Image (cartoon, rainbow, N blue to C red; front, side, top):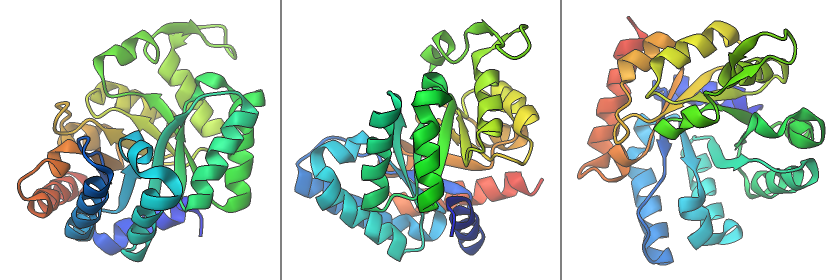
Length: 255
């Protein structure tokens, strides 16, 4: 089953378009692993996938702690996304993706700044062979994203002045990416990207909660999946918070 099919199936099974960003504050590795496992077991009924980044990979290691978390997520019916923001030359990118796929990750996030030829092409080819996913980083959720993703450039195809993130949206479409990340903190940009992608490439939006992104505004603009980290991981009652967020997302999607 492809990554797109897996996350679509999980969303329907869980009645949820909420993705948990399993970002935890630094602590001793055994405490991080225990906390991650407990948190996942608590909130799994209310989420459709798990996103992991270097918060856990660096202290826990791929073949030890991370593999246990990925296996648990799969046992709970949840696909896994590695937020590694792949951003190097092609051979290095392919090796990075292969390590994450071999541990069991269903998808990776990659940075389109490096381009296709000798950039992300090897990652997409590997993903296709392994039936895994590649999600492109189109516009990040922090204010400084304007300096890179928001810069004005000349569209190499049309010769017209346009925004960098709109060119990245076009690449997500032409490269047949499995998703496009656009921060929930910028609903106007979500709307612009959705106008390019339509329903062909789903939009994933981080930035709800700690960064101030609004769920309803993001959903109305075209987001399909909301990625939430600290609002859940640091909550006194993570399961209750996850359920509340899941329900809000569903109500907004049904409008």
